[in-house]
Length: 173
Image 1 (tube, helix red, strand yellow):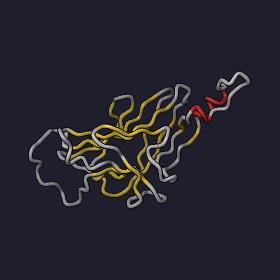
Image 2 (image 1 turned 90 degrees about the horizontal axis):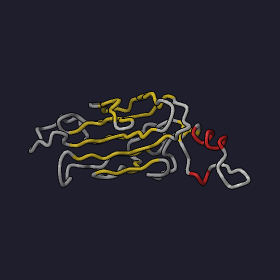
Image 3 (image 1 turned 90 degrees about the vertical axis):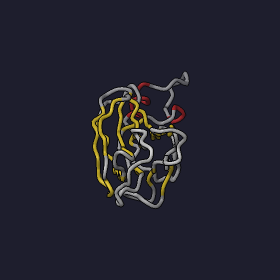
């Protein structure tokens, strides 16, 4: 599960006498750690999910603890390639740091791939990870959008060639 300083909802910020969030509270909120999905609810702020399917909470395949999030089955999508993202954002006051997370990416081209994108730029492509592994990504200071992207049938091949028996066709965080 991800460990990264993130931004909580504005309702959790401390306010000054005028009701505005204090700079100290906003800065502190950017340094808050979102450590896991152990609340058993996803998506929950600051996370979102979307695309051709939604990531969901999973109890069956976890790295540490009771829950992870899992990519959807996109094999029945209306068109290809099909993409689904789990997304988290940092705020403008984020000081930078290393995101470390447990990942299982049981994917293999041409069927599917898993990428970690920051502000729309691919930073890591992970494939053929049939067991959980720790992955780290450096995040620069400031506001960023981080997409964990499961991509199915990326070349639009029909029919897809037979896949490795080890490939599960899913990603988990």
